[in-house]
Image 1 (tube, rainbow, N blue to C red):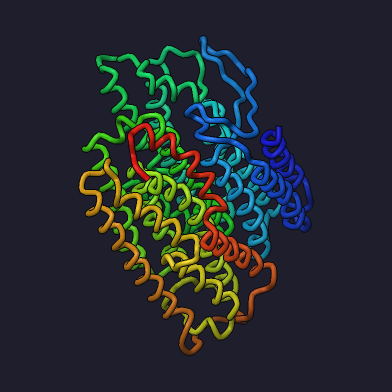
Image 2 (tube, rainbow, N blue to C red):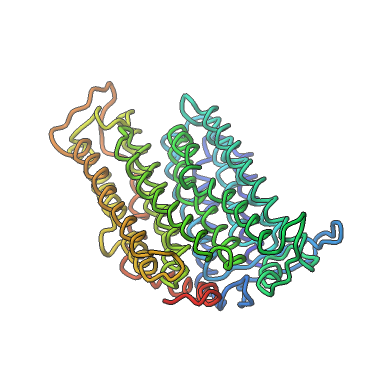
Length: 510
């Protein structure tokens, strides 16, 4: 029952913090957020599952209880983790605690409500990554939108209401499209459950019947397209990415950390679970695989080019996330052990590195009150520790060896190059690798302009070194990034064990 305890404690912590006085809310929220961190690390230490949770593998910390019966379908409280979901659970708890600390300086109004909503969002994220019943998963999936909407709309920048509404409308419509696609599958299977393992095994046993004039193959294709479109908005991939820069720029720093670090991973996690695990026969059709690979490469290159054209540091990091998520999509559609394993590893690596980058930009903004590249230079003279960590994080983004980003991208590229699913896989891989050059270009350009050279900044504020609690979360994220780069088996071994059954279905290689 540790998963129930993890989710329940986080919900309870959110309630307690909301009722606490504002002056104590930040410290109290951080102290309570350490409980799920300890719980997730305990789960990691005692993890003993094998295989894939949706494909007859053993499930760790499993609980399966009857909940409701609706129109002949059994809804269950069904939770558990395997090697794909556990790394994301650990990422969610650790990043939430650090994001709460990073909010101590910039958030100075309605602190109780802010930190309560942050914890409420964390509890729902834990539900998304542990739920194994579709309706339970969908409740958590939708519930994440609510705190994010208020966190952007109340504590955001000048255009916060526009950004919050745009975020909510995009992601809510996407959820509806995905929901319709998934239900089209379930209602044509001879089952009376929404359990994800049962649905997956029924689909792969060929038990789907046709509907509304579509034979099973056509129905699968239509459902696959609907689910892919719905999840692609959340990732986001081009051309569904336009809500992301507005949300990031207007959101306060801690919210941007959670948005890039964990919320985007909901989309890639769902793509892996629903599209690529349940419907591999659709994903591996040559035309479908070609389209998805093309979308991935376009996201890599276009996202990087957009980042190259920006002057706002936060917008640069936001667009770079679009590029990084393109690598994840390429790894998934490769259908090799290294490809899908690398994509899953990249979800964790990008969560750490993007969180570091957004926090570092936020610390600089707290001191200078600007994020514009042309407004400042020589920040390394005034904020050497912050700048040092920011530079290290940027090199991690570029794929510097011995950092998590390098390991993830190496696995993805090797897996994609060897793919037998993507037609002309080496060409797509080579095109995606060109994105690394562009990433290095825009990050080096931005750092050279803002961090080095003679100090220059027209401001009425004192430019001083950041305080300890501003820098400490950056240092923790940097250490985690290096640890995963030096020893990727911390997570990669358990990821590989859960990926192998997915790859084996299509006969993919290592």
